[in-house]
Image (cartoon, rainbow, N blue to C red; front, side, top):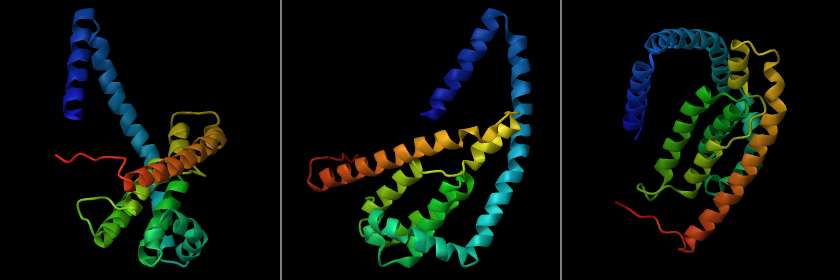
Amino acid sequence: MLNIVWPIFIIISFSYAIFSGNLENLNSSIFQSTEDAINLTLNLLGTICLWNGIMQIASKTTIIDKLTKILRPIIKILFPDLKNNPQIQQEVSMNMIANILGLGNAATPLGLKAMKSMQKENNKKDTLSDSMMMFIVINTASIQIIPTTVIAIRNSLGSGNPTSIIFPVWIATICAAIARNISNKIINKNYKKGEIIIWKQ
């Protein structure tokens, strides 16, 4: 779909710029945007490297084990099928910790690793298990205590108070987390009753 949408946007933009006499402004904005993108990337690189390094160091210490123990009661409630698999619990915990710290770049590979492990334990390889669906929902709407990436972006763009979004982020992500858990439980319950039909091509 994106392979269709983006070319259409580009064609419309160039056509409008030509017919409205703003082709020079379009060219200038293209070069300015590429320069801004490079500057933003360089500004974010340090923050991303710092937190990814911290996660790598933490994974080789007992910190992750302690944090996993703290999150274990929550994981048992959200992932009852994983109660006998401490390895996957630890992988899920690391992903949740990365998301809580707002480290989307670190959370992605950790999440893929956890999904791969859950797929190995999945009896129906062509169907997502309850744990896999819950994990996807958690990654989509995760509670963030420190939105590190967003703060870094705001700081790089010259925000006077880049951390002012922390409290609104807490409210938004907590509401999203509550909504996700309720909706996921309802959908899973109705699916098991046969009230939801999934069409296969």
